[in-house]
Length: 352
Image 1 (cartoon, rainbow, N blue to C red):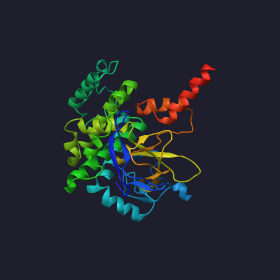
Image 2: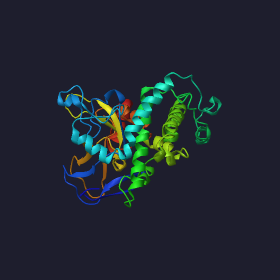
Image 3: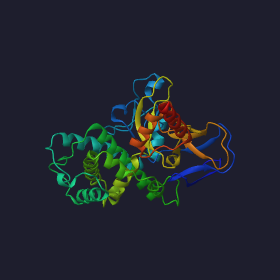
Image 4: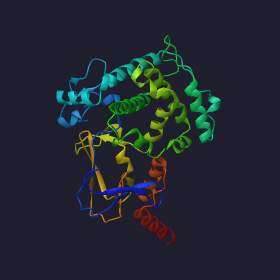
């Protein structure tokens, strides 16, 4: 946390939030997240978005960046200094470049293989209870990997699933980097990530087909990591991958272009400490991306004890649309003051 004091504590409506411990003036920088714990740039944008600072080529009136990590890595940069910084801080032991190439290779192999089932369909029953989900994961965890003769058997993934695999792998690399650093407690550590809300059950119960997708992606990741000794400790069980899946939902931030002319989303990222900001339909905090960093500023004066909140959705929408989106994608019913007032107004209008 930066210079403005605030603390994390329980909220009256459930869960935890961030609360001011002294008066905060409008415009104050509240928090700076220097780098995401995990991130992915959509494959179709890889040549257009810098792998280090996330600069969008079109914002610079370019069609693509031309500084490449290495052949087959699928990572481009806006300039050599960004490439060199990324290699130093993000590509420890060349893991990311190796994994990106391995993902592309396995994806091509999977396209040529017959379809297969990671988990028998009879295990993927409705309704999706925690017991059903646990049993399916246990089966996938103990299933044999596809053979070297057909490494992609049953692992054909669509484009979004492949991007999600890259996101999961970036989290594995981050955990490996932090575990290898041996520098003591770290902000945005794996332990911090585990403290984020686990949305596995509400997400899967609302989208039962997602469980089979998660299990395919998990097996795909197992097949990739099988050839990367540094990461194999994190795949001895499904715990690490499953934990990232469970917190990917509702705890990540979309990455958008910086220009004022559009809102092109070219990937997503997880800033662990930033995920502690709750939502309000009348937020007192705004977020702003500055290269790889995510900054949070007070939009008005904030009193001691007041919760610091951002907006997860477009707050210009109607109260009905806002509440529907929050329930569907963030798994809660908004009880902010603005929603209460607008719901009350709607009730009065319906009665007259």
